[in-house]
Length: 378
Image (cartoon, rainbow, N blue to C red; front, top):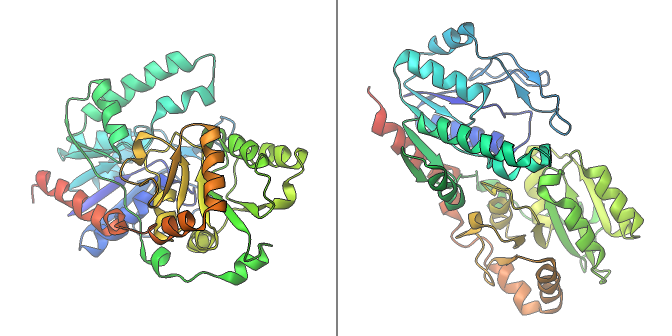
């Protein structure tokens, strides 16, 4: 099949959507398909023969400058039609998604859509004053776009339940987004990296890895870390984002910055090394729809301590591969359990990668391919 994956987020933008689209493309190509990624232009992008970049400009909103959007024009539709696609798979509801939908209608080919982002979880970060009307708009727009597709893929039960509440009427199913597991499963721990970052073998390293922005609640993580009195507990912050300076200020003002290491952005092919040297992955976010970093951490045998959310059902197995918390007090309680009870720590570490193959990119691509075949006319 000739398959077009349409996305507003793709490398060099580092995000769960970028990674998901790239993994799917690679796995589908391994299965013998011709795959094209259709996305926006980015001035720092590396040209790739299977990636078609069709214009793009920066979003003017604070904290969103790395993202690109593009106008849907007749010329761009014609460029897409020239690819002679059999299936269009949209990974965004916005500019590239609209382009894909328009091209599909023109060509008379099916549209599969993956809903990646729970917009109603983000609107209050744009404007607290306009949060309610924006939430209503996001609901109706998301429902309208999903109902215009032939088949919709939901990455978690949380997203599927949300769309059932929205009034979704088309065919859809839950397929967890997969990752390439090999580098996480097979890479040995690089103790020299741990030492270079200033951690001793007796330190207990808590890892946050991701975009440092408000929706990730990293300010809450920082304030809760300040409360941990045990000097052996260190915090490793991998990534960057608009709220990094604010978090650094919180930690410095509280006098614990000597127990925290910020690495900034790391290259994608080095990310797995940081999971490996950590003892526990921590996250306070409730806006995750895919939780790819959670899967990467488990594949690296690094257990989870993360805020509870519906999308973690079947991912975090409490007391087996980590813990979930609903309050800050619960977070502190689990931290104490982990650092004082060696048996608990050993158990969740040993079981972290249990049954991880169900989250592989190959498994994901196989399930997505089965959906394509339902509509393929070749």
